[in-house]
Image (tube, rainbow, N blue to C red):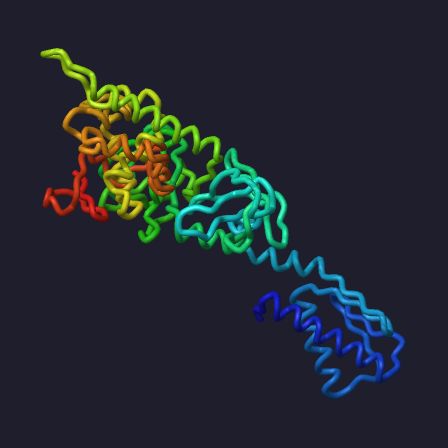
Length: 394
């Protein structure tokens, strides 16, 4: 017999009402419901049946109830323990977590008031730890961000865990160097790639796997890695403080000004200048990568945005391209937004989405859903390759 919490409470209340009625009618000196026993005097028929039914609930859910004449005492600490036992280990770990149920981001306030200053933002997919829950506001911490969020825009505990499973990728964090990504669930199968410790791979949750293996996405196909050398977890993010966001915006604005100055420089005959060299000096890798992702696939699905980030990182690692994110992005004739000025405008405006930042972070951390592709363009171009969203990767 599986009952939810409200039903359990209803049974307990019904039982209490029954025992109180019994005490009043029979003038019994004592009616006690304990963990494993029930005593009552002079009770028969329907009343006794109700008490027996209550005892069933007591036995199954460990509800301890004591009734003495008109005084009623309920002891239900073990009830909570019994309910917690039904949660998975993952759900139990999430009982102190919170997520913002929003399309883009939720403002985090310095005080429990809508009139207080904004401390930072929780973007969709970010997870926070509950410091202190209130009726209307909850104090949280996430990354370097601490503040208050309004409860009506948030979900917690098991609901937050279910939400995270829907909006966040499940990733496999690599715990060893030179982990082999294989085409089949066998140590004798073809090696598609190798990855090093600290990298993360997107888990293919739809694939059927044998014990000891984890299915991961490798471009358009499913590949496999040994479960012994990865930690599978949800790919959640953390909040960003206003100071962190402002620093990124200021850096982008300074970089845009530097790029404009670079454009106006007179280049001597026979001298080549890489577009945007001055710009990158003032922008961190995550912001710059997020900006090019925004330019190339900002309106597309997250997987497509991740693919753009992966292409940049794959070029950095390849040896056939420059060995830094900035040099790859600003390499002459490669990424159109870098030479057209669109990238500079995005950096200057700070109009980079949370998903673009997430895709950039994941790509830098080694997540690659393209299978090692080094190029991308709009799928409408007709170029051969792996299509993800509105982009094709090759």
